[in-house]
Length: 447
Image (cartoon, rainbow, N blue to C red; front, side, top):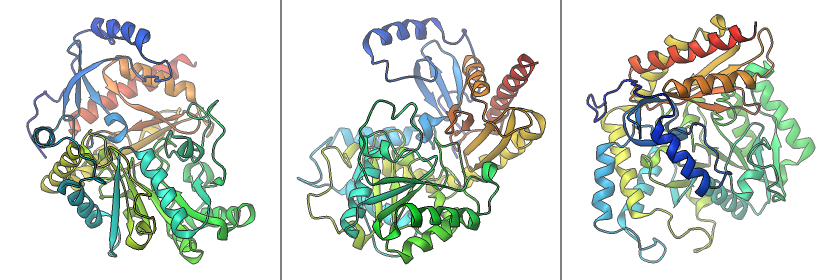
């Protein structure tokens, strides 16, 4: 891990948040940007390094969100910026499916190396996580000759028309956006805090639903997130994915691990499904793969990936030369700086600092996480009833005090903490103190 950053790794407020320049930019934004592009905090950023963002007013803010899991290796990593700049000076675009280039091949080779499984793997590179999921659907349907697609309750798979149909909750992504494609099914999942089931028990519940509501022989692909990010950092109980993987193999269903948010070193492994001892048929990758540049991928068994006819998958900007150059730098940094171990360090630090919150604060029902991916479920004290009003208060207090955290959960009641894996223990402690102050103030307001 780099010990020096271009920005000091400390929270430092020089104005109220948002500051005057952010307020002025917000006024311009309202006049020019669609209201549909909502924002968590109207604080406008200028630059950043490591786990710190600096806004246009000069405030230094602790980033516990990483642009929803993108800047896993830290903001504006100089080696990633240099790799992208060098590539931009050589070649910015040709379209791989017209006149190819080496970067695309090298990224595909690396994905074959780091994704689970020792079989031959092939990849396609695209732009976004939703596009990766959509292509995985197309590939699975082509391979199996089937049409039905299954995803889990509390899932989030994207904002395109197809991936919105695979996303669990209606608000805010789906309301008023239909109709959606058919043959998309949501099935019960394992949610240990809420359902109290073992992994095996939850898996049998999932399988029974499939058999009685859909029919296994109709299903082309089963999509799972090893850790549900937007769904509330839900981590299924041990044994759940193992049984589902077996069920898919038994029934000719393509088992897809959606690693868009949890993959690329965030959880202490290259891919979060590794923690469950399961090898998927296909893996989708995005977010953290290119350090902030747009890139995504579908990687999997060669015979599945090659089932699509030439020209059946692809896109104008997929695997762009600059984005792939950035990704190659990210891979090198993760390996050279042992960032898988750094994610484990962050996990240990978070457990040590916030692991007792459920015993300390009445509104905290559960703390859960893996690596640099944690969720704090807020509930009405003494119950497991979601408490979205508490989360809204906590997030507002955090942002006005220089800490960016995220909302999550199907009931908007989970505080999502996803810092860079290079964040220091001192920053974790400082951010946790701000969040604890918010819990205390909210609880006092309820008396």
